Length: 144
Picture 1: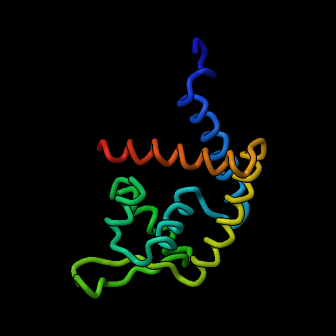
Picture 2 (picture 1 turned 30 degrees about the horizontal axis):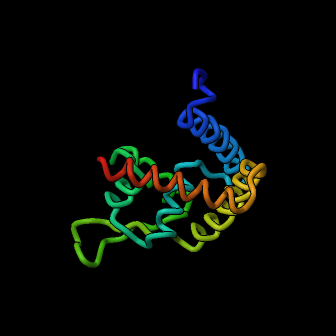
Picture 3 (picture 1 turned 45 degrees about the vertical axis):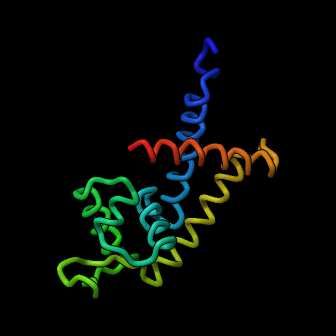
C-alpha cells in the first residue's frame, strides 16, 4: 500500500471525480442543467415536495447556496415554491411537470455515464460495490 493507487479512498475519489466531471459535461448539454440542479431535482423526485431548508439539509448545502440554487430552478420553471399548508410561515418546493421531464432526461444521462464508468465490472460486482460504498457512506453519516 505504498502508493496512492493502493489506497481505496484515493482510488474511489479519482473514480468519483472522473464520473462527476463527465456527468457535469453531459448534463450541461442535455438537458442543460448543473450537477447541483440535478441533485435537487433528484431529491425532490425521491422525497416529494419539501421545505427549502429540508432540501438544503438533504443536499448538504449551506442555506444561502440553496437560495441561489432554488432561484435558478424557479427561473427555469423546474420547481415551484408555494406556502406550506402545514406551516404558512415557510415555503415548500415541488417539481413542476417540466422539472419531472427534465429529471427523467437527466437521470438517463447519469445512468449512461455510470454504465460507461462501471463497464469493467460484472452486474454482481456493481451490486457489491454499491452495497459496500453505501455501507461506508452510512457509517460516515452516522458519525456526524
